[in-house]
Image 1 (cartoon, rainbow, N blue to C red):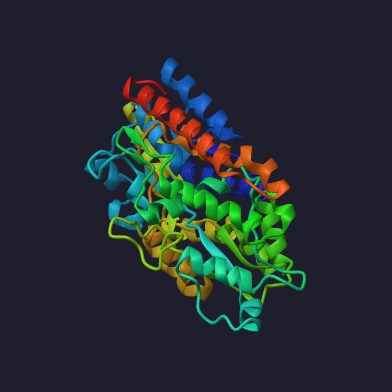
Image 2: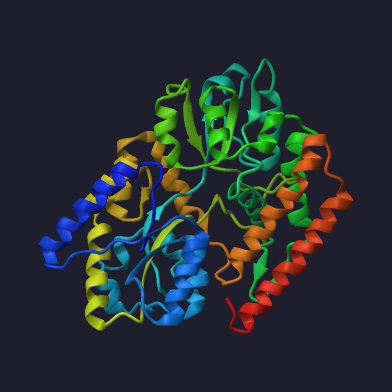
Length: 410
């Protein structure tokens, strides 16, 4: 079972047809494709399969959903022989293995695609304002955004209303400050590092005025469109998936990629317990159902081996934009376009979200704090009292989710 692709549906169907023909040629077996359209549908299908003991043999999962899949106990824990069957662990970029399981000896997931997050940067705008080096701290980013705001452009293009973007900012800033948000069975959602992260994120609208006021209603595609139209100096939290849009845009000759800052707000250097997390470990993983027969499991690993080969991963990148997890393919792709070297570096500096089945719920709680704050942002202010109350509520929800996991619940 794989995610549907609404961005490139014709190309995706063509890919399925070609892979299907190659798999028949190599094994004599036909692939039956199934798709899901959302993470909610993905979770429902997995739960149904776990309960019934039947369903797809292979699942493609988002990396942050892998801990939830692991917690079900429904997927094969990979042995050395299983890894050899898919080409060996050394086939894959080491960082992409970071969320394959709770430890290097307990893994269920094979990395398929990598989508490390970066900033897109309008070099022409920066040069016009005398900015020659990329910001490495969040405060420097804010200062550069202030310097480049004016004359119809803004320093930052941010998607405040996106369902996936906001929590990544909060997670990154908190990690940089030394708060991993989840540590074992304990959450710290209402701590000072998290509050400072929200303050910084909200102040870009309410205090610093370095984003278009309309961005409080934007999704990621709208924020990308604004940057592509030359209306912003920085577009943080984007991936190489933006390449097709940027290549055909007004900034096609003026943009580059840069790492996201890794020094927390209010600091000039990372604290001793801070994490140099340039991105979440983002992408897609492949898992094999343990309710499938041994013969089907062997075929499943053959399928995974096929679609993680270097040539297949390079072909996928050229069509869909996802960065390869195959080390050889990743190097080839990065060497072919200087802009992509940053993506490879961001992948190396990516850190996994907490490997806990509760993470999905906690992630949604972090987004919900932003969602509840949008009316205040539109009015020009999010009060500290309101933010603190929302963080206390998110903390309560996080503790409840962790408790359910401890007691064996999804």
